[in-house]
Image (cartoon, rainbow, N blue to C red):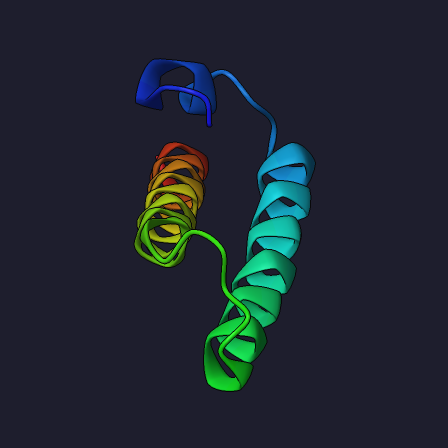
Length: 71
């Protein structure tokens, strides 16, 4: 997972793609957990945190773009 500073350097489409990938991975991890096949339970927590980080940065970037367009 890239660092926060690296995420800020990504474009909106790249962040949306990364968000979709993380959502897909999180879904698969939840399915594995439900069936008892999960190999690394810690990955569930880290995937959740990574998804949250990507969404937060994407929304902050969108907010700053809206603010700069309004001025």
